[in-house]
Length: 136
Image (cartoon, rainbow, N blue to C red):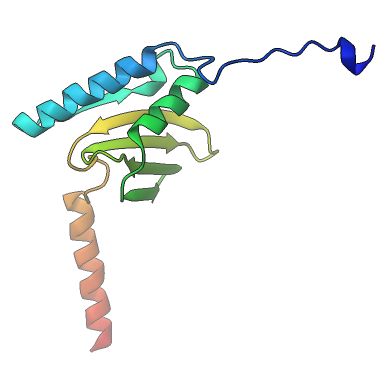
């Protein structure tokens, strides 16, 4: 068998697109309209949807990238990337082994995982006061 016997198949750039990503994009627009009108956000669980790799790539290209990217390291790494449309966040959570365990598009002012918990703030204040006491 020579190289001339190997079949060549050309696929269009849209190969693998199911149309599901376009539906997700329309849902993002609806949630963004609701956030603008009432302050109520929402989330779309991408891991629960039948999206192909091509769908995900297309959706990522449509949403673009904004000015903010946040990385959290607690029980694995989480990345929160603002889309080109403020209020839209692509959120990925990985476990300690690096496996993707959750992927969401959150429509909100800032994802709920970002603000410090009041107990953590209190703990931080206590540690800072100990540090200040050590300076004296």
